[in-house]
Length: 339
Image (cartoon, rainbow, N blue to C red; front, side, top):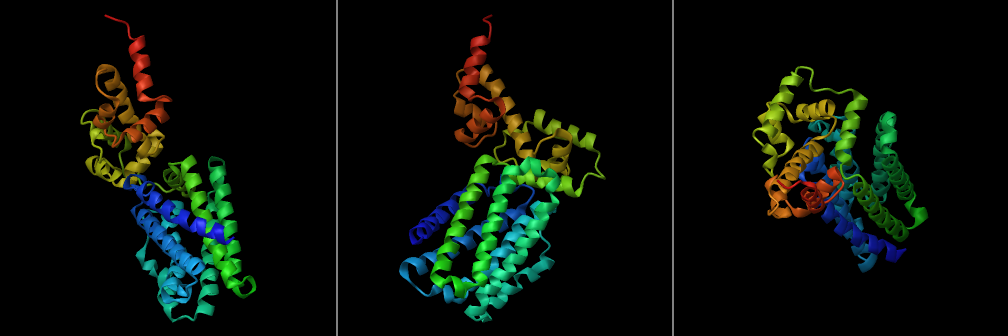
């Protein structure tokens, strides 16, 4: 079990780095800036805790009894709440008047170690209960997220087990508990990467489901037809999709809507989320260029329509057309009659 704990500690560190550089990009959280910041901070907290676990399990230090570890321990649940609440409740951000969530973090340094540890897991169990109730509130959409909900339930069960062990630390044994805790954190990273690998647009889909479940609309005072015309003009005439830095915030400013209004407009009137909408415009433009400019390299075509790298271009093109850009060009040029 010691070896497994150390291996998953190392995996957690590299996994957090990859998630921070890929998943938590601004384009993936265009509507949820608070969730993005909280998610990155949560990664930092968990990785720092794993470093403490490594120090204790491998070097046999007493760092886990210090103030820093206690504060990190009390920070996990509130930070996860801040990350998930805007997504699961279809709200644009976090109300900082709810800063009372961090009271335990502030109080943690004054708590004795034997009290702090079980109290942190008791509070964590409360947040887990909130998460379970909130996810249950989206039950009408469970068919769309059956796989993800199964994995979420697995994480929930593991977290409950760890919380129970934390509450009964004297029965489990300190060394065994921290081995299991390090394994639990590493296992959570494994599951997160599995889910995101199978559903890379999960954040957008969850936010969309939450809006549907809670019937939250930001378009009650918006002329949707006129807004759609402005949006189409921006993309078809001004070709804003060619800007590689184009995001929801900038496009919303151009069409004179808030980011949440534009996101809902695209979702409800066009039946897709913003990243998909943008990818489709870029791929359609690329398809035209691949045929019209047969001497141009595939990479130059992808960059000219707004993609930032060849891998992003290939991934989006294959997702929408079912084939690579090179194969598409070859088929089209072969089937084009000579004049």
